[in-house]
Image 1 (tube, rainbow, N blue to C red):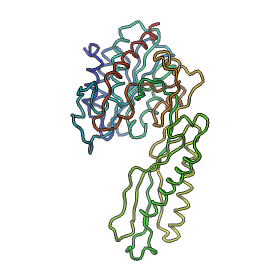
Image 2 (spheres, rainbow, N blue to C red):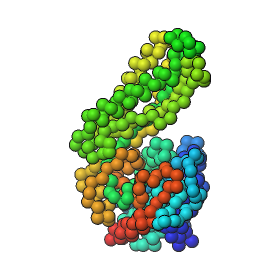
Image 3 (cartoon, rainbow, N blue to C red):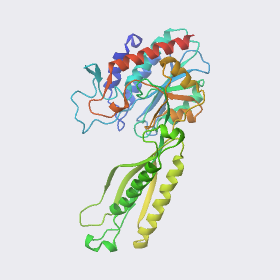
Image 4 (cartoon, rainbow, N blue to C red):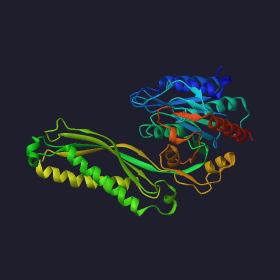
Length: 387
C-alpha cells in the first residue's frame, strides 16, 4: 500500500520520473493521484492548455476552511550538458547526501508532504491538510496561478500556505519578484562592408543589453533601503542569459532573440520596471526604422512572479516559527510560488529542506540531515492539525 511507504521511498519514486520542464509530468501526477486517492483524499487536476502537463491539488480531513497547504512543484531543470557522476533520475546515497535531480529542488519536500498525507489520513484531524503540486514552476511559475484559482472553486479555503522551496528549514518571509520579456529584433540585411545602410539586429540588441548593464550599475550604486536592504543583492537586477541571431560574420544580422529578466525587490513595482524597458525599446526601434522602416522590435511577456511581502503577524510565519523555533529574519533573492499564493489571499511563507545552492547543479543533492529535519517538521505539523 502507498501509505506504508517511507519518505525516502517516496522520494526515490518521485525522482524516477524525469519531469524536466520540456516534458510531460503526467506519469508522476498519475502516480501521486493514485497514492492520495488510496488514502481517501479528494484530488483535482488543473491541466496546461495542451494537456501534456497538470498540477494536482488534494484535500485531506474535515471539509472546513482554515487548513494548511503544503505546496511544491513537480518539474525539474534539464540535465543535458551537465557532468553527473550518478544517474540523475535515481536517488544515490553517499557521504550523508542523497543525490538525484530534484532531491533538493524540490521533490525532497514533495516526498515529505506526501508521507505526512498518509499519516494525516489515518489521524483524527481537526484542521484539514491540502497538498498542492504544480507544473511549470521552473519556466516562470506559470502553473501555480491557475491551480490556485481552481483550488478556491473546489476546496474549502485554507488559512495558510507553506511553500517548501529549499531554505534550510528556515522561515523565509520575503523574496524578490520579477518579470521577463522575450525580445525579438528584426534588422535589415546588407553586406557588412556597407553597414551604414543596414541595421544589425545583433548590434542593436547589444544596445538594450548595455542599457541593462547600466541600470544594474545605477541600482548597485544606489543600494537598498528599508526592508529591501535585507536582500542579497539589495536592489533590482536585470539579466540576459541567452541570445541568438545572425547568419554570417559578413552580413548585418536580420534577426536577434533574447530574454531580458528583472528580479525586483519588494519595494519596487515590476510593472514599472517593465514599462521602463518598453520605453527604451521604442526609442531604439524608432532609430532603427529611421534607417529602414521595415525594422521592428517585438516584445512578448515570458514570465511574471510577484514578490513575497513580509506579513504583520502572518498565520504562515507564526506557525512555521513555532514549529522550527526559528525567530530570525530571512529573505531570498530567488522567486517562488509563495508570492502567488499571497496574491490570492493566503498567508504564505517559504520553508523547506535543503540548500538552494544545490538546486539546478550537476550532482544535485540534499543532505540527509536536512531531509530528517523536514521529517521532524512534518511530525510537529501533524500535531497542530490534530490539536
